[in-house]
Image (tube, rainbow, N blue to C red; front, side, top):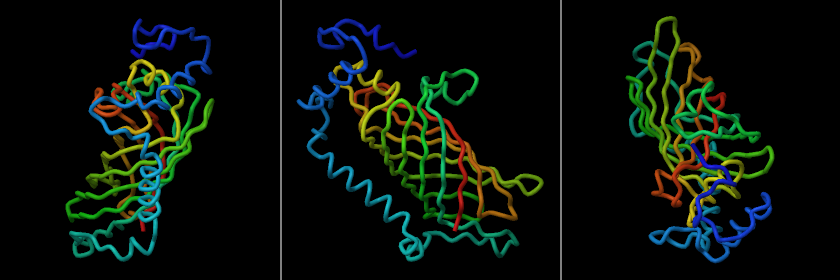
Length: 259
């Protein structure tokens, strides 16, 4: 269970009066100003903020470009047409909306066993499958950009590799589990991210590992449209990245159009 802002262990924060969110935010700004928000093993990323933002933005724009999508062939073509099965397009664009939880990654899978905070996320996701097999396996990449809003406003961008498997069930239903791993960057922390960043003296949640877990459903006769449930997870991987144990989780639903 995450500790509250008013129950931090002695020694984790500088000795000072914590009267509210404004003072806590000032602590974060002071740490980032002098570069102490990155672990000793990491690079001084605060000197490269503009470069990181530019690379993420370029990835999102290029991946979403129809011209780029048409010019990039799949490494392995699915031969679904020969089997009488509609071929699933390799490119897709999705809209996702969700609510942030106060729990960790594992607990966030259960809607009844996790708390929710008054912060929400709306995202646009561009994807392309590079390796496509006739038996359902797909490997590719995705780029996303999100507005995070509620008590605070923030922006997020991420890019990652994807792997999915489409299982055809009785009645023409197709269920596709999907896993995404990559990197995520945000403009500023919100919600419980602030709590988790302040728990550790050298904590930083601005750039974390992105892990997405998703289950999509579609009809075999209409492979161009999917609806999905996703756990949108930013992770410190137990202090491996950003020197934090965890980041932020949001659960929600979305719709994907393939083309």
